[in-house]
Length: 106
Image (cartoon, rainbow, N blue to C red; front, side):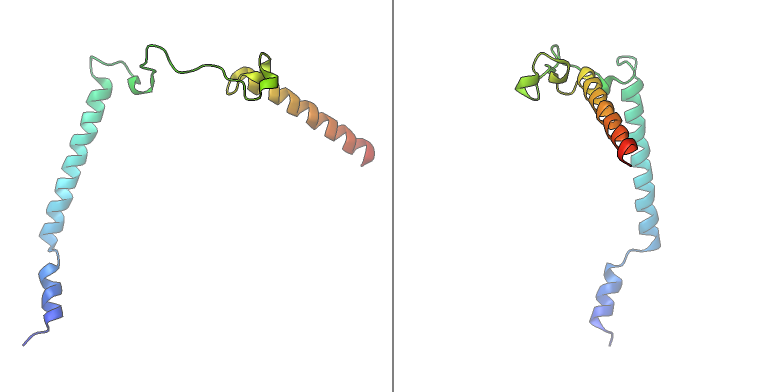
């Protein structure tokens, strides 16, 4: 007479051969999938980095003013390089003010 729990555990356990077959299948499927990605990316019908390019006829980029009072100025175009340059300049000015204040007052 054997323990029913032990019998159930042994019946549900994977064998070493089952694990090895599963591993081989997984490696083979990953190899196929990676080759598919490589073929899709470097195929003769698609240029390099095609998945990164904008495929729409009219890309959805319009400069939007983050704050209406800044509309029409460098700071007005949210997410643009001009706005970054504007704010970096303002931050540099403020930093210089703080440094001169610290230098004077200690």
